[in-house]
Length: 185
Image 1 (cartoon, rainbow, N blue to C red):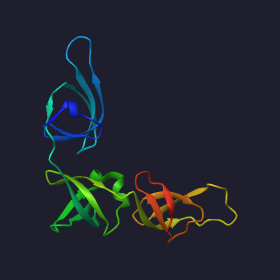
Image 2: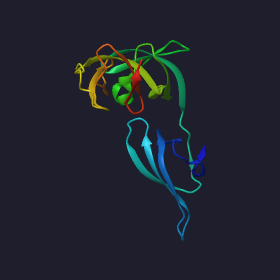
Image 3: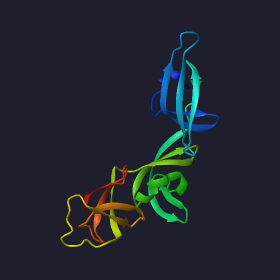
Image 4: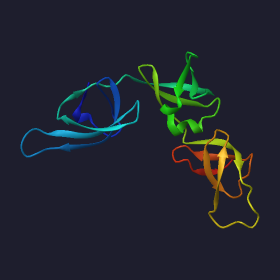
């Protein structure tokens, strides 16, 4: 059990059978009456943010979250297929659950997956990944204005702005948190 005194950003709690992550909170102590905590909570299943108020000292349930080492295997229509590294069981995660993170997955990539009651919620990607440029316009010689970029589609389907000297087939390093080009490999 968690108390409202344990609240901090990033803490995960369960309300009405749904896991939430605390995005923001404010401890309010009015002149009259008991103290309370205003919170912004992110639903970890559908991503919606809700506001809720708790009385000071109120008890909350800690959600049944589990972090597992997984390996990304392949994409099957709208689902991403992962394999548990311990039991070798396969698990499907929908594109809607992973959001933009799905664009950085390469076959065979090892990562941590957050599970709630055995169902996938989220994945922890490495800070950067190396991907191959599948499609981009050729850089024109002499077109070297400092800092100029062009869009490039990578092997996984995501589009990243890259410098003009990057060509099709180049392997580039991309920041998974911001989606920015870091450098060539």
